[in-house]
Amino acid sequence: MVLQFLPSRLCLPLNAPHFHILPSTSVSLSRPNRRTIPTMSFPSSSSSSSASPSVTDPNKEEEEQGKVAQALKYHHQTKHSFTNYARGPRGLDWANQPNPFRRYISAPLIPLLHFPAEKQAITDDAPLYSSLFHSLPPPKPISQSTISQLFYDSLALSAWKTTGYSTWSLRVNPSSGNLHPTEAYLISPPIQSLSDSPFVAHYAPKEHSLEVRATIPSGFFPKFFPENSFLIGISSIFWREAWKYGERAFRYCNHDVGHAIGAVAMAAATLGWDVKLLDGFGYDDLQKLMGLDIFPEFKVPSRPIKGKFPDIEFEHPDCLLLVFPNGSNQFHVNYKELSSAVKEFLNLEWKGKPNSLSREHVCWDIIYRTAEAVKKPLTVQSGEFPVDQFQSSGICSENSYKGLTVREVVRKRRSAVDMDGVTVMERETFYQILLHCVPSGNGGKHRRQLALPFRALSWDAEVHAALFVHRVVGLPKGLYFLVRNEDHLEELKRATRPEFNWEKPAGCPDDLPLYELATDNCQELAKRLSCHQDIASDGCFSLGMVAHFEPALSDNGAWMYPRLFWETGVLGQVLYLEAHAVGISATGIGCFFDDPVCQ
Image 1: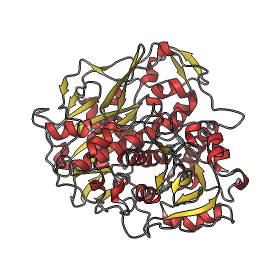
Image 2: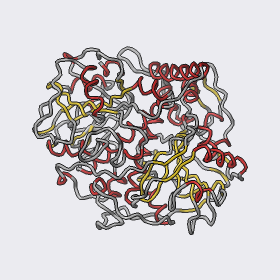
Image 3: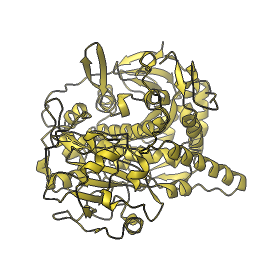
């Protein structure tokens, strides 16, 4: 979800088309009303850079251009404007609200351990939240306890809410509309008390259990992955999000993938584990690895249509994360050999039948056409898998944090529904939050993603943040810009108004690339651009994420489109956690007027 606002008298189109707004997270920081907790408000968008698609065949080049065109068509068709909203349901069909919990019926269910959520003593097993950004604890062995803890602190249920006759759950990982399209899979070597053989299991958050779907060949992990490592697969069920948001749902599903990546990276860090995206895999490999070819191919209709489409409840495999002990040396990865080994997964005995989520559905055809266009092919490469040294984040106001453990922060984080409009934030707290939002950590030029949790991603930072400061003590109200990839600084200056100051604000740390652009009161415009929602103007500040958009697609391929949202989702996750850690709260705003925000 994303927001982007500029004072009305400063509104002008960008001079260059390279930077773009994508839906991401809007966060608003503030003290809450009596019926809410304090909050933050920030918008988002994204872009990414990876290896270029080496397309030499003219037919393949034309095919790739068509895929990029489909991604751009989707992005433009799903924009909101002052006069027209993206297509979606005119009301909510409560009778067909999707079941938020996928289960594989008849698959063996193995319970995981639960852990105390109350105040913890600060130990190696329960480190302070802020300490993880400076160094990781020693790695723990893979066991029933540590695997249980990883899921408990990343993708599990965190609370149940009840009002009237309605009851619903909340989860550790945020989700647009609390609809949770994201599913997770554990692909692991044998773990005592869980499985005597290597296995693939689906994580069932309601039960906090693993559904064992298949056992895999014993030589798979020793041959391809470092010792004491395992894999986490992430998939999306588009229908869950489309039920409420219609065509815009594909944006939100991918943003939620980013939230999940960030959540897993933070929980793994608590255990002394590192996380890296294995982005050489293609869509087909991920589908086989997670056993998702069990779903029939969905035949996409030619237009939006309502009816009974059980096949629309399929899971789209998004990505694969390698979890391994921090401090590990680089290791060899041969994606071609890996892909060949994964083909044998088709011959495994897969257990469990996926449950039905709704009786009737609405198919928004452009979602599925775009998902097809942005499928990533296998990257045939062999060589050393780079494991960059952990880079600590900058410190300017450690006292801003409230002494909470990681678990207290991640499990008690909530999305605020209201802001009080009066709470203020100290300038040093504002700077400290932003120091945890830049990718390269303490010292040096920001570009590479080396700091927690951004180091899980496989490309240089492409997402920046335009900040609209409402109530930060010691900073004038106005528009500021956080440059998360400093290689883009000069291009950003050329792409925006020549009148902007581009000056470091007072007291800004040297290693924080934050710039004051213009001073003015942005609150009314923030509200207007965020679909007239008060929450966008009532926080201490809000922000919009800006991406190097079309170049990222043309340089890499259409498959970069969802990855832009993943990066905004990781950044949004950090903003959520930072808000709670300093004693306030944050929320994401998915409804914003795209082009006016960009202007």
